[in-house]
Length: 437
Image (cartoon, rainbow, N blue to C red; front, side):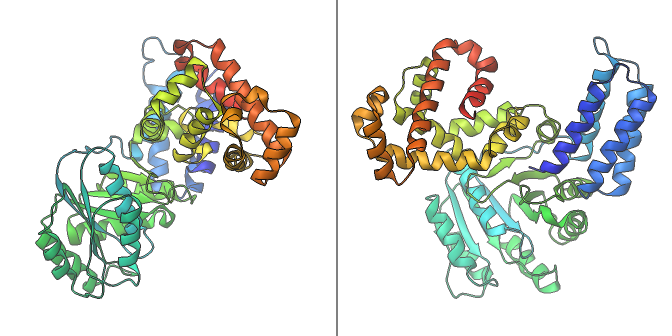
C-alpha cells in the first residue's frame, strides 16, 4: 500500500530517531524530507505546505507533554498532522438494513467494488442484494452476476433492458438487508449521467450515496468528488486500486479536502480486498506503526480457530500447518500482512523477495496433495525415497518437499518453546522470521 511513500516517510523518521539532539535544524530537515515524499505521492502542494507549517509550529513551539522527549513529541506531531490531512477520523458504519447507491466514472472499479461491499456486510451477518443498473457499459450485467455468484449473494438484473429506472423499481420488490445498486458510468460526469443517477436516487431514496474513485487519478479526485457531490449529494467515498499506484496520497487527501469522507479503501482484486478506511491506522501503517486490529479482523474471517489453537500448542499435522498458510494467503499479499504487523522491513530481507515465498507456498499445496495421510500426520516417516515419490507426484522438486517439511518442523519446535502469552506479545513476528528464512 503506497509502498514508495511509506518507505520515504519511514526513512525520514528513522533518520530523526538516530539523532542525538532534535533541534530546529533537525525538524526543518525532517519537514523537507516529508514534503518530498508527499509531493511524489501526488499530494497537493498547498496542502503539503500547510502540513509543513503545522509540524514546525507544534514540534518546536508547543510545550513538551509530560513523559515525552523532544524526539518522541516530534514523531507524534508528524503522526497527528498526517492523520489530519488524510481524513482525521474514520466514518461511522452502521450494521443495519440500508439502501446504497454506487456512482462513478468508467475505470473506477465500481462493479467489483459493489461485490466487495456486499461481501463486507455478508461477513457481518447481513443479507446483501446486488442490483445491476449499469445499462451503459457492455458486460456490466455479466460481471456483477458472476461476482455475486462467486460470493454467494443474491443478484438482480434484466439483461438487455436499457431503462435502469425500470430495473430498480422491480428490484425494490425483492427482499434483502443491504440493497447495493451499481449505476452506469461515463468517461465524464455529463448531463446524461447526472440525470440518470438522480433518477435512480429519487426512486431508491438511498441511505448512502457512495462515490467510487480510483486512486490513480491523484489530485483530480478533488474535482471529481466535488462535481458528484454537487450533482448527487454524495455521503461517502470509496477509493479503489490503492495498492497499484503512487498517486494514492493525492486521491485520499483530495477527497478529504472536499468534505466527503473516505469510508472504505480497496487493496486488491478479490472480494476480500476491501477494508474500512481509518486515517489513524492508515498513517500508522505508512510510518511503520503496527495495525494489529485490522490484521486480527482479517485473520478471524479466514483462519480456522481450532487449527490455530493446535498450532499455538505445538500439536499439529502438516495439513493443519498448511491450512494456516492458506488462511494467510486469503488475508492478502504477504507484504500487506507484514505491514500491518509493523514488520514491513522483514519482507525486504526474504531471500528472493516475498513473491518468491508466495510461489513456494503454492507449490507446497501440490506437495501435500501427493502425500499419504500417514505422511501428513507423521512427517518424520518421510524418507528420501518417499521424497522422490512425492516430488514426482506433485510436479515439484525434491527441494520443495524438503523445504515444506523443514518449515513445518521449525514452526513446531518454535511453538513448543513459546507460551501463548508470549506469542501474543512477540511470537507472531518470530514465527514469520523463522518461516521466511
